[in-house]
Image (cartoon, rainbow, N blue to C red):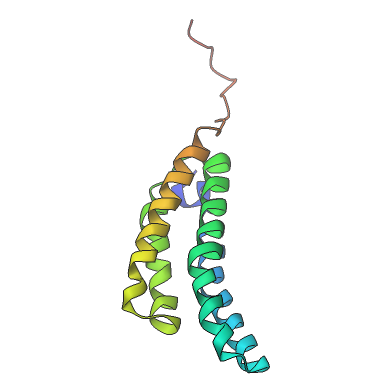
Length: 128
């Protein structure tokens, strides 16, 4: 079985993370323009950075650790994925949040992997 096929669930969760990183700020910006509440806009974007993105990142990384085990993809992918919305919706000073999301993700993935139960091969005898 190929490594890519074995980690299909991981890639699905990583794509979901990227979509959240892009869609939440885009929907927020659209809603702010719709109701013409620019004062509220900055507060909502800060809430995304401090609450929504960390919660989504930790949830998806822990879920992946529980279902797929530990993977190093959670070290680099959150920061890479955050660079696109950082340049579109924020500025370069928000890069530190991408680093924090990667640290949160790898920690959550590692903790989740502690609960990962690998399937046992029943066709070979167990050593005592």
